[in-house]
Length: 187
Image (cartoon, rainbow, N blue to C red; front, top):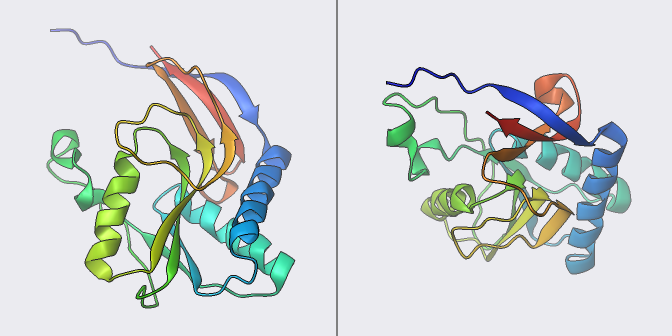
């Protein structure tokens, strides 16, 4: 039996705090282009990385428009198609959506999109809560490599040509005491 331990090391810092702020502003501008008055729009951040991104996005949208839009946070742990392969005792985070999603334009917010499996799980969880008018997707980083026919509507940064053992990791100050987007390699 192979007892190797996978170690992680940062291969390259793609973005620091200032660039992340610009990328979030870019996503906000894309949203405002499609929803200029933010009518019946709500943000729902997918736990964990989507939560701080959604909060920052909400703040920027408020600064630009003066409109306070609803925000919620969604845990998709039990909706994932792989949770039983990962652990017998999943760590479930909190879902907090303090408003009805009925007939709202919901913008799901996540830090990175890769295969599309997380977004599929999030849509399943949302639909179990009600019937939104529309579901859109905002991501900070699109790294390609879809396994499902899911594409984001709003994207901060597209990263191409990533190898199978390379990952995009987003670190938010709220969770990790720093703001960085890194290309990481596991060996």
